[in-house]
Every structure is written in C-alpha cells, then in structure tokens.
Length: 180
Image 1 (tube, helix red, strand yellow):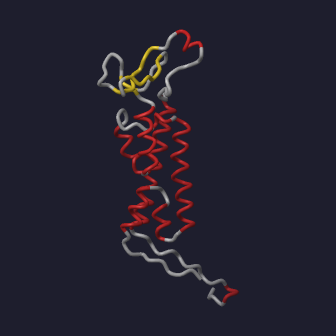
Image 2 (tube, rainbow, N blue to C red; image 1 turned 90 degrees about the vertical axis):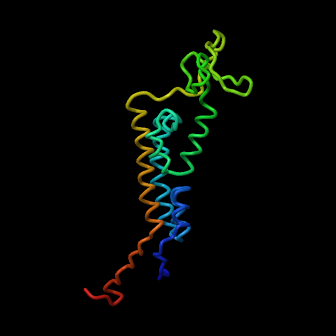
Image 3 (cartoon, rainbow, N blue to C red; image 1 turned 30 degrees about the vertical axis):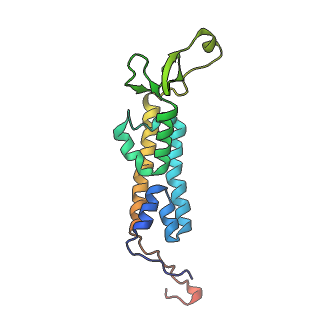
C-alpha cells in the first residue's frame, strides 16, 4: 500500500514544473506521473522542432507564439537562445536588423558581430549556404502550434503540481473481501 501523498499547495513543485516538464511531479514523489508528463509534453515539443526546425521557436519574429511556447520551460528558452545567437545575423544593408539567412548567404562573424555575406561561386559549388532556412507555410505553422500545445499542456501540469489532487486509492477486489 502506497503512503498517502500531500495535497497541500506546493510552490516548489510548481516552480519545478515550470522549469522542466515532469520535474514538479518528481518533486512530489509521483515518479510515474512525472515520466508520463515528460514524455507527453516533450513529445509534442520535439515533434514541433522536427517538423519546423529551430526556426519554429523565435521570440523576435513570432513573439505571440513564443509566449505560449515559453510555457514548456527551459527547453524553449535554450532553443530560442541557440536560434538567436547561432543561426541569425545582422542584415548587411541594415545592421540594426537581425534575421535568418536568405539563400545565397552565409553567416560570418566580423568584429564580434555576426553578419550575412553573399556566397562566392566556389562556396555555392561546395554546397555552402545559410545555417538555417526558415520554415514556410503550413508546416511551420503546424510546428509552432505543436510547441504551443506542449506549453499549454505544461500549464495544466504546472497547476496539477502546484495544487496536487489526491491520488485515487484502488478499490478492494471481491477476492480481498470488498463489497459488490
């Protein structure tokens, strides 16, 4: 028989749930639920990344979508950091604008700042191109939506970890002397 678990308001578990999906339930000692939550939320998150690439998470160009995606927690923030700092660069015609690369450009770091430069014929022949080409059309929208759904699911998980409900106790079977 499992020991009864606390159903009190638990801000530590809530905070842990916001950091990484399933971590809040792990803090509560609900390992099975933590694993299932992690698989569900991270499955949606990874599906979105596989479908739309790293460009599916972008706090500069898709700010409204990013708010929902950020509910996944640290994974979203890490992917966004990598996207902004390693896959984007300044526009050569307008250095104040940071953007993804266009076909025929490559990312070069000059004086500590990443900028886009046109590819030479030799670079084009070698297959060199931008490190990231933004997803287009419906596929990118499906990818962003999948990650937002992961964030919304994690919001529900956060509330469950913050204010846990009692786990159901199994009813005794007839063989154990239970009533019918």
